[in-house]
Amino acid sequence: MVIDSNILSEMRTNKGISLKKMSEKQPVLLVFLRRFGCTFCREALDDLSKIRPEIEKKGVKVVFVHMSDDMEAEDYFKKFKLPKSIYISDMEARYYQAFGLLKGNLRQLFGLSVMMRGFKLAMDKGYGIGFLGDGFQMPGIFLLQKGEIINSYIHDTAADKPDYFEIATCKL
Picture 1 (cartoon, helix red, strand yellow):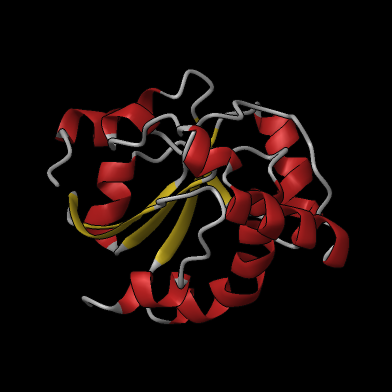
Picture 2 (cartoon, rainbow, N blue to C red):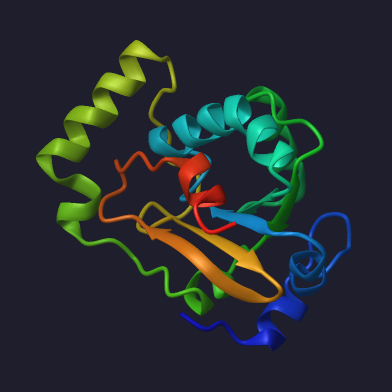
């Protein structure tokens, strides 16, 4: 998949750096979060808090994309032990669309396996169930290098549990 370099230049992190410029300096694992109210998004943040140091030791910078305001994002990143995270706020989901991330259908969002896994996580891990954000937006992960996508993971369901380390390092 080729992404428009104008979009990458337009996408600016909370640090004011364009994604294009950042990806020219080092590989970037761009993690499009579903929504902060989502049980699976909370699981992703928890997983990434544990694996991010290993990913960054490999020279890959983790950047999150979310659909909330910066204050809300900071609260969630702190809660999940991801302080000083680099992120891009995309409240209109324009960048989600540019990367081909669509709205989910009933199976992807509310299928039996999704509901069972979500309930189990909510109860076992205490992630809870929330309604903050666009409940229909699907997440995705992209490894960018020199302004190009070199690896990606597009979720089939909201409940998918990708291997972030594998995605971040398999083509380096």
